Image 1 (tube, helix red, strand yellow):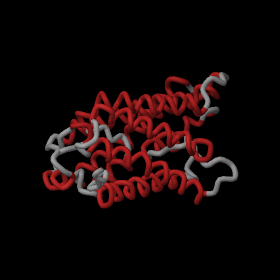
Image 2 (cartoon, rainbow, N blue to C red; image 1 turned 180 degrees about the vertical axis):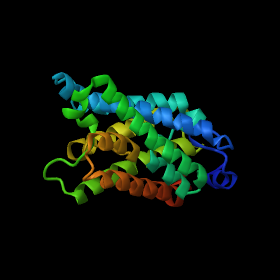
Image 3 (cartoon, helix red, strand yellow; image 1 turned 90 degrees about the vertical axis):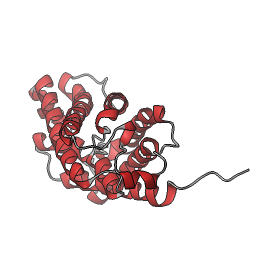
Image 4 (spheres, rainbow, N blue to C red; image 1 turned 180 degrees about the horizontal axis):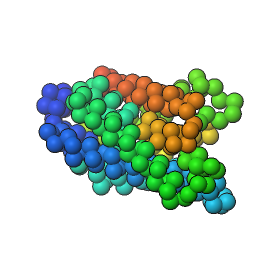
Amino acid sequence: MASSRTTREAGSAGLYGSRIGDRVGRAALTEFIGTAILVFVGTSTVVAGPATGSSLFELVGVVLAFGLTLVALAAALGHVSGCHLNPAVTVGLAATRRFPWPAAGIYVVAQFLGGLAGAAATWAVYGSAARDEGLLGATTPQEGVSAGQAFLAEALVTFILVLVVVSVATDSRAESAIAPVAVGFALAAGIFAVGGLTGGAVNPARALGPNLLAGQLSSLWVYLLAPVVGGVLAALVYDRLLSQGEPPEA
């Protein structure tokens, strides 16, 4: 793409070299499958300890599971759908006209359904202990963490994730080969940063499926709204303030 302006006007270039075209259905199916895989691998790692009695799967394991899976999926599926796998990413791109709003709605539905499918797969694989002991990896604020703190934490780490996504995956000046790694590492960093406070959802689709199936609904609104706020702000900051920046000449 020649520039961010050209991208917005043409409306044809998506993340990781994907093209925004008329066949939204197949791209949405890719988003469904990718989100389901991401949520299944991540939440399975969360529930593995409580469900099996092993202490192996702690925060580091969860971080690696989500981060490495996103790296793999972005590399494998990015050229098909853009591999958003996160409503915060999709809405952020749509808010800056880097993605069409009608397709954004379809993507978000596919992502939420994928999150439900991924959580259901974790339940099926690990059995009743996954829900009874591990709550299917549902994200809830830890004791003593207020809704306001949780909202701020989730918004901030999603801001970081989406800022990395839009910078490395939509700007032609960035090295495209490193984009999946950068995005996966950004997700891992976000979970590291706030996992002990909120569980580190950083993604409404990752939160909805496990929380809904595990009956953890009291704080679900935080995990649905805060990432979208952070994602939209990140996309706007990059689009309006950072995208035209260049290093000073020597």
